[in-house]
Length: 267
View (cartoon, rainbow, N blue to C red):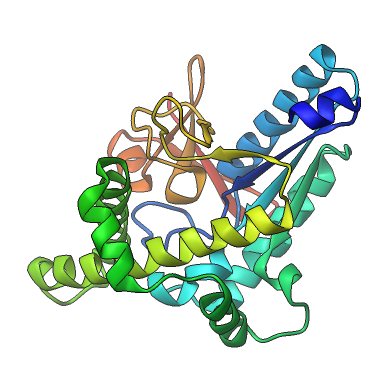
């Protein structure tokens, strides 16, 4: 960042985020972006605009959509990931500004199949699980991220269609969480190589002094809740992110736009 400022160039930010909607329909409305993503994109665009007022050369923020990276581990079909990425690109384009951009694993190796893309990422950037397990045991912050992934994986699969036991799913989630964490870290390495001078942002809470800056994408009672694991609920005073089942328990009314479910409204 200091190099960009010294040269009076735009500052580049990267944000690994917006992978794909959760497969648990008790949390989200469907597999496509809705008002939750729209509000988050509007917030990011406004943030970039406000930073540009302070720093006239401006800022550029690239959203590194990572659904393709671990879709096979979270049980989301690649066609749903493709549809989500296309809709996200349309949302970004609709801002009418050049401050935001989208980058995906597909852009790393255009024309390569999703399975081959993940194989390529594993060969070039993914560390052995034995090494990662040791790091999780030794690093409290990394362990907290791992446990957060276990929680999300358990919630995403433990929906109305799941027929197994919670204990079995908990064991499976612990195993899959290491795979997701390994791929996420590999994606971080790839993004770092692709955008070496960029300031790194994160949708996860970050400790002071971290190499990344934590960013909250919406008003929510849970700092780990994201637009792709939640729905937008309009209420007096603004919009809040919450799980779909929670919105329905509160008696919120579902709103459709352009023939698709968009968000809820509380009286």
